[in-house]
Amino acid sequence: MDACFYCEKDERLDKLMIRITVLPWSIVYLNRNQNHKGRCIVAFREHRTEYFQLSPEENAGFFADVSLTAKALTNVFKPGKINYATFGDLVPHAHFHIVPKYPDGLQWGKFFGDEPKLFLDEDEYRERIQQIKAELDRLLS
Image 1 (tube, one colour):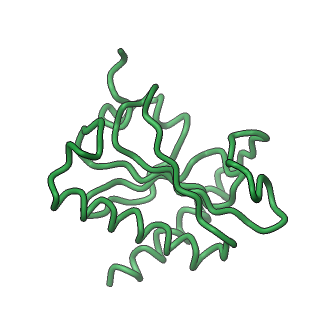
Image 2 (tube, rainbow, N blue to C red; image 1 turned 90 degrees about the vertical axis):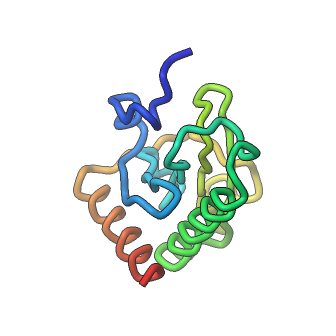
């Protein structure tokens, strides 16, 4: 199995996401595919493949970071609902996909997917990242 790109922080990670900020227990990334406006990934800062491998303190802290990120996305983008997903077959590292969904929007009422893909230009990514980071910073203060 390949080395974990969340740990290696190499071009595989850069191809899929952009780092927004570091939280107490995790790193928040903006997914480059923005077919769901604001879609992020919250990855545990240390390598763990299963949530039961986290200590009670790590578990509580990580899920607090996930909740904080979802709240920031809700405040910034006003989705109708946040979807949460955790995978790991191909990338075995504890992480959550935080996916804002919008009424009458793409895949509302269905499982979210990666198609159709929507990539932004660099200025749009910077703006979206700045909005999310500013709201996370505000919520943490």
